[in-house]
Image (cartoon, rainbow, N blue to C red):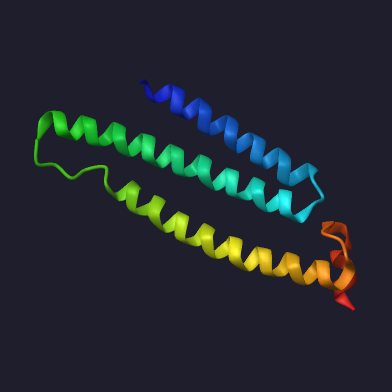
Length: 111
């Protein structure tokens, strides 16, 4: 499968995530859109990793080129899991205090 298909899919996923973050007011949906953007970046990193590994493997069978991006994907997934746990804890506390998950009500937390 050509790399252009992966690039187009990742760009579409990232644009959907950006549109969701900019237009939605529900905190849970905003976090889901951020996760969608992170997964689009992961898809792009894995696609380029596969492309560079195939090119390096054609010249040298013992090459480990292209595995660095897979390490980045692993770290992005770890950071995303930590972000989800902290984000959901904040959302639960926000819901307990103001009985809404609308991010426009966050200005009330300043007092």
